[in-house]
Each structure stands twice: as C-alpha cells, then as structure tokens.
Length: 269
Image: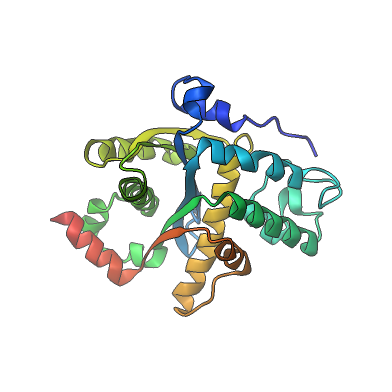
C-alpha cells in the first residue's frame, strides 16, 4: 500500500477560507459531502455528509489514518477508505477478509461517533424520478443528483439558522467532474436566498479525511434508504445503530413517487 499524503484539516479549512490564519480557522464550520448511487443501475441517487467546526474535524484525522495503516487492522492497510469497496471487498479491499473489513468499518464508525458531527443525507428513488413529467423534472433541477445537492444545501441552511444563528458553513464536495459545474451553479442560487450557506469547493477524498467520513455517511445512508424503500419498517444497519449509540444527530430527506410529485408541484409554482 502506498501511503497517501493527506492535507491537514486545519490547513485545508484555511484554503477554503482563502488563506485565513490558523487562529481564524479554529472555529470555522465546514460541511463535507459525497455522493452515492450515481450509476443509472443504482436504485437511488443520494448525497450525504456531515458538518462540524474545523477543530472538531481535526480530532478525527489521526485515529482515522491510524486505522488504515498496515498492520493496524489489515496486514497491508489501505491508502483511502471507500465504503462501497470495503463492503464488497473490491479494489484495495480485495485481499482484506470480510471480518477485518467489518472491524475497520466498525472502528471508523466509533471515531465518527466520538466527534459527533451532524450528519445529513438527501436521496431520490431513481425509477420514481424517471417517471416524473419533463416539466416537473426541470423545476427540480433536471437531474436527481442536482436535486439531492440542493436539498443538502437547504439542510445546511436550516441547521445553521437553528443551531449557530445563521453562521456561514463552508461546503466541500468530493470531486466529481461531471457534476462540479452544476453544483457551483446550485450553490450560487442558494447563496442569494438562504442564510448559513458559505463558500463551495471541491477536493479528493484520498487527500481530505472528512471527505472519507462523508463517503461513509453517504454509503450507509444509501443502504438504509434503499432498504426502507423496499421495506418501510426496515431497521438501520449495524453501523448506523453504532452512530445512534454515540448520539450522533442525523437529518435525512428521502423522496419517492408521492413526495417527488409534491415537491415538484411546489417548485413549479
């Protein structure tokens, strides 16, 4: 395994603020987001992540990296946590036995629980999106991922008004080149009308640990929401239950046929 050179969280937060000093960075609020289910074969499209101040985010950096190191849980270690690969034993995780992969994911859920960020996710059932009339799709952004991004930005704005008196939250999304421009456009629209929405930027999860946390949240949210779509009274997965045990707060928006139609009619007005 080739060790990644991670971007220290406080330095990264400084770059998000345009080079602010470390003293000024300490209290800045940053939300990190990643997507799950962007393939046309996926049942859902979802964006998920979490918000905390940069000093809180910095507390997860060392133990997270430690968990991935060679000899810590697996012999070879991994350079970057990717939840779907860990769950399915693919790419860097292909040679890691299932019990060790489960142990790694459990330990990382414990580390998330220790810092207690507020978690967010917004997801859309793809077949229900596909069944919407064209004008309703246009009113909702024209793409289920665009809608999910917008819903997450609304969640951040609501959280900021409720919890931190509207203080701006810097938004960092995992780089996804085919969607970055659209995300910037959605962000510019929300900046005009919603308080609590700070700057937007993009980076690589392999370089920024909180984006690996966002990947964890997005994937587990996808799995839970998918199971709920099939069985409304489905229990959360064991990793979610562990976060609940740690009293991690979570905000989810889940849109199926009925809720998409209601949202679309409201957006078209």
